[in-house]
Amino acid sequence: MPYAICPECDEDIYIRHMPKLGDIVYCPSCETRLEVVNLNPLELDWPWDEDEEEEEEDLFEDEDLEDEDLEDEDLGDA
Image (cartoon, rainbow, N blue to C red; front, side, top):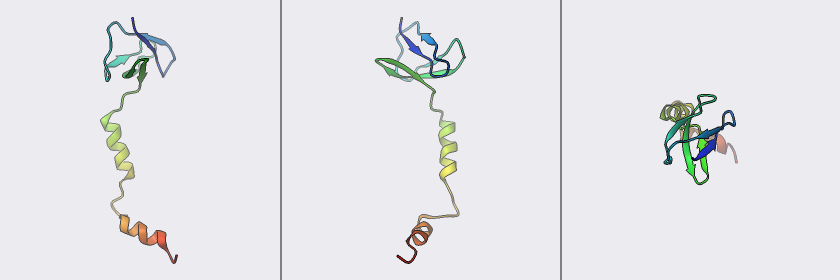
């Protein structure tokens, strides 16, 4: 039976079937939702949520400041 270590609580997670990349499993000890990110060796990690991706993109967007404005300010009197 394949197993991997939970990145949250370091407990062994035994998986009843042969997992595929992208499968979601839950740690029975800490109930963390994890994604299979590697098959050999079997490795689990926190899944990437598209909602998080959108939030990160929003952090880097600034509609008031454009690339042209940055270039003019950075050059100064060089």
